[in-house]
Amino acid sequence: QALTRSPDVRVSDGFDPLRVLAKWNVLCIGNVYGINRLLEGFSVEEVEMARISKDALKGYLLEEALAYLIRGSGYRLLVDPRQDPASLERRGNGLVVKGRGSVHQSDVLGELDWVPAFTFPLRLFVEAKASRDKVQIGVVRNAVGVKADVNQPPLVQARGQSPQRVHRYEYVLFSTSGFSKPAQDMALAHQVSIVDLNSPAYRTLLRAINAAAIRIVDGTSDEGDDVLRER
Image 1: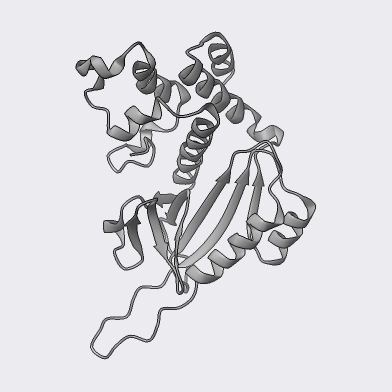
Image 2 (image 1 turned 90 degrees about the horizontal axis):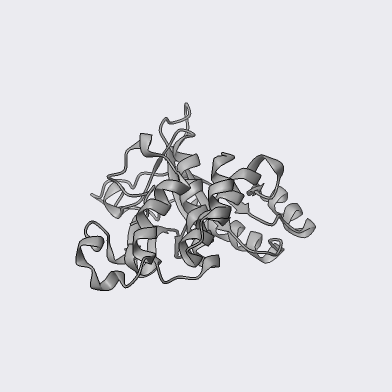
């Protein structure tokens, strides 16, 4: 399971590229598959993580960082269908949210710890885009459709059944390379939040993620050490 999003990870643990490195660098040293003691405490997913590409790892670390930021902003992370069997389930590609017409996977899913007065519990549906190109309007169109589907009220309940609990979902798109002008206009028109991680406010975070990915995949350390000391 994801480090930050694992149910057994304490809030105080937080996101720290050094903590991620400490766990995964072990898997990148020599023939780890022949050293059983090094694999104790690691899941199959974590072992396989040692094999993924640098770009894929950057995307994974970005999701972990966003999960930490969201959890620190007053949301509890939803990571298991048992937290809400009526609206969540596990599919082959991970945790999904049941909409009126389909199911939808989010990179991070959070529910606000407190319910705004006189309204429904608020959930945050997060999608992260870690690419070299700006997010285009098609991605925002998909976000608009997903937001509409998961916010549809449940079908009429059969007599004798308890009504399904309703949640209000907000959708936020994060991008490491910004958004095209049409994508920005579409997001504004349909109230999809967009966050440009390429801005100075998030520069240190992105550099730390990049350094961590380099150290894990390439086995180098100098660049990562320099960047992480700047945190």
